Amino acid sequence: MEITGKISEVREQVKEWRRQGLSVGLVPTMGYLHEGHKSLITRAVAENDRVVVSVFVNPMQFGPTEDLESYPRDMDRDAALCEEAGASLIFHPEPSEMYHEDFSSFVDMNTLTGGLCGKTRPIHFRGVCTVVSKLFNIVVPDRAYFGQKDAQQLAVIRHMVSDLNFGIEIVGCPIIREEDGLAKSSRNTYLNEEERKAALILNKALTEGRKLVESGEKDADAVRRVITDKINTEPLAKIDYVEVVDWNTLETVEKIDGPILAAIAVYIGKTRLIDNFIVE
Ligand code: PAF
Image: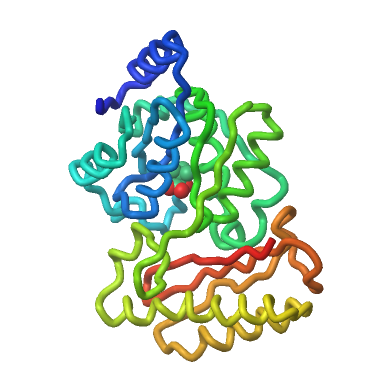
């Protein structure tokens, strides 16, 4: 497995693979990889001849008060995990390689990005769409892999790929959880012992919500209420949002009569965690 920070070297390598008739998968990440990322890489390795993992903490998707500086980084550990999972190449650029001094072009979206995480993170999806477009243009993969934990991101990227004719298959992969149910996230490392226990409330609340939907409840407000009430039993938890939306449009629904996404963002102490379930 090779590691490079240079766009030109990625291009050359992929060109060589293409010359050999090999298919290429891409797993975009911000590093500090965990079992969730590993499941994406493993799937990509199973479905492609070669796999590129990008490790780049993208400054453009962080708001001014967010955790860009403190976002955890450990390239040695990331490289070991990628190697073990069977990746062929890690692309680990410096911000200056991705954004030259007079960088001024962006990819933005008018739908899907205003609600859920977009409400409190207004520039986030512009940063995600821009960097993912750049990665798609650099690697030109056949398939790219994203986790369902960032369900809004997955929907936004699918929409962007369709709008802009990228011709790349977007593969959504299931949420990977710790044994006690907490969704794996690089940000879990911010939690102290007490907060780590408190964070279990996210999955507990969603489990109650899902049971209600699966028992046939059609009133989306009733589902929101069950999830909200459960989260509010945890003193360390502060709700950012609890939403039940149409899984295709991400519009709030009143009546559940098609595929829905129930998504939550909750602060545990200072750490903002997200989680969700989808009922198709
Ligand atoms: O999900 C992430 O880790 C990031 O948003 C992504 C897709 C790698 C873009 O920076």
